Amino acid sequence: MTVKTRFAPSPTGYLHIGGVRTALFSWLYARHHGGRFVLRIEDTDRERSTEESIEAILTGMAWVGLDWDEGPVRQTERFARYAEVAESMLRAGTAYRCYCSREELDAMRAAQVARGENPRYDGRCRERRAPVPGVSPVLRLRSPGTGSVVVRDLVHGDVPFDNAGLDDLILVRSDGVPTFHFGVVVDDADMGITHVIRGDDHLTNTPRQIHILQALGMPVPVYAHLPMILGPDGARLSKRHGAVNVLEYREQGYLPEALLNYLVRLGWAHGDQELFTREEMIRLFDIADVNAAAARFNPEKLAWLNQQYIQRGDREQLAGQFAAHLARRAIAVQGGPPLAAVVDAYRERAVTLDDLAQASRYLFVEPVPLDEKAARQHLKPAIAPALERLRERFAALGGWQRQDLHEAVATVAADCGLGFGKLGQPLRVAITGGTVSPPIDVTLELVGRERTAARLAQALAHIAAYGA
Image (cartoon, rainbow, N blue to C red; front, side, top):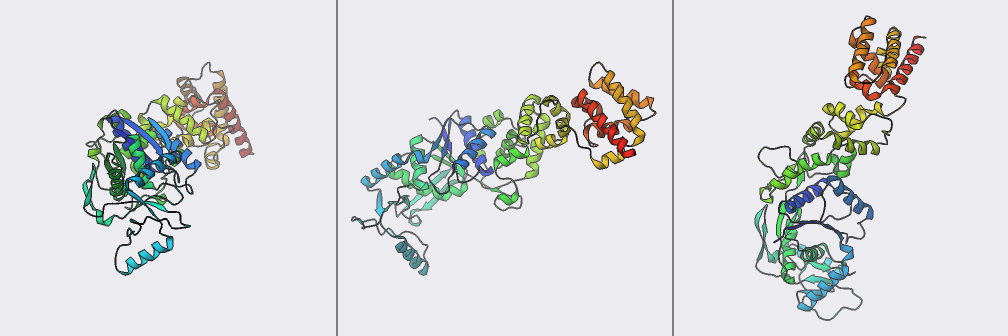
């Protein structure tokens, strides 16, 4: 048997963190077993589904690198198939038309509540044969009223449900649109899905879907219902806990591989290992090792993981990701230093790509703005002669390597009777606009000869105006 899993989001909003975790576990299970992974867009809610949301889902999946073997399949393209299956169920007697009006159903449920019963459809149209004039019927499943159904779940074990508590659910609405349960079952059966991996909020839906599969004489897939993700406060993860849209993490400068590494550990573990390559996740992942208890989202742990990936990552790959981030920030890199060199210079202190962007911004903007406090403290008239001599010394250099630059600063500092730091810090303010940067020789090399000359001239002009 070829393992086949699917991820089936509804395009009624963005791709959220919980959805990415579900997609990841489904993708890993398929990849681990050499199977296939399907992306299906469940867009039958035509009032709430939007093309913008579909695009956000596809963009989010592409960003985290969860590629699919089939799809994206859209349910709205399969209405003819749902109608065909519905008609076959009518002929077989496993489904029936229900002509109950909204008012009739409301009255029925009100009476049940008044009697202390759980409100549920009572099957009053099960044996009705004649249509009701002026009423467009829905299609209901003829559910078994006795016995039980057992959901065999790889995470929760066997979970039994009493059939008497499950009423005849609607399969097709009066406008011909299939319900969630019906579309899911027909799609999974037609696509040959062997393992349904999804959030445990769907666990109570599963016995109904098993009833539909049994009515159709189709095989029941293996189920695995993943524990929900809670916020740090123990409440269900929501917008108030911060970024839950996966693309918000991209905007904040998180790396997709760090995000996946973090999400795979929400409910699954391999000993005490914290860092996993994609290949290791595929090789080691087993749905049987998923914990049934809810997992808590820890933003600090995600930030730590992201920092590890920035510090340890391949410099050329990080440079490409950094370039994309700078583009999203509308920071032009043309004329600036090689991005791989920038990554090397700044990665030790950066938690996110946005930290890299903010810290190195002076490398890409012209003219660089001077921090007023730093300028008042370090760009004083007394330092102007040393900065002028530095400008002349830099102009005379044959190359622009950090060793030569370090020697030039040290020589001018000694000639002017200054300690290296006493000249280095005013120089740093002059060429970066602030007081924090990598070592001054590294900083000078990154800024480049022409920009260094222009910024020294700007600083000297500032000192002249300040001293006037």
